Image (cartoon, rainbow, N blue to C red; front, side, top):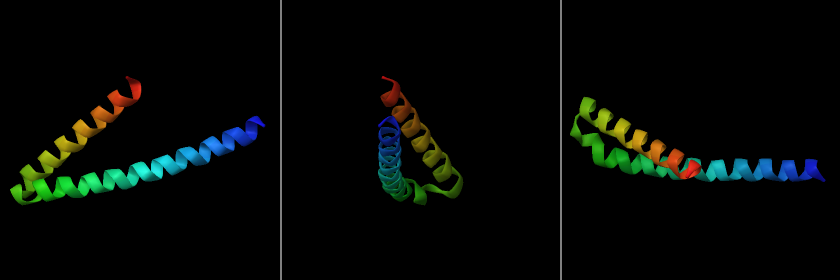
Length: 64
């Protein structure tokens, strides 16, 4: 029974990670819209800052 529970949890985790990937892909698209026309170097820096803050917020949300 424990093995079945482990397999179900594993597939549920893969499913949630897939959904999270699509959400992050959408957020990356919107970040690209806002920062792409700024200039290649500054736009990349602003996108990096966006992703850095997003990752920090996600980590704090997981461990809070």
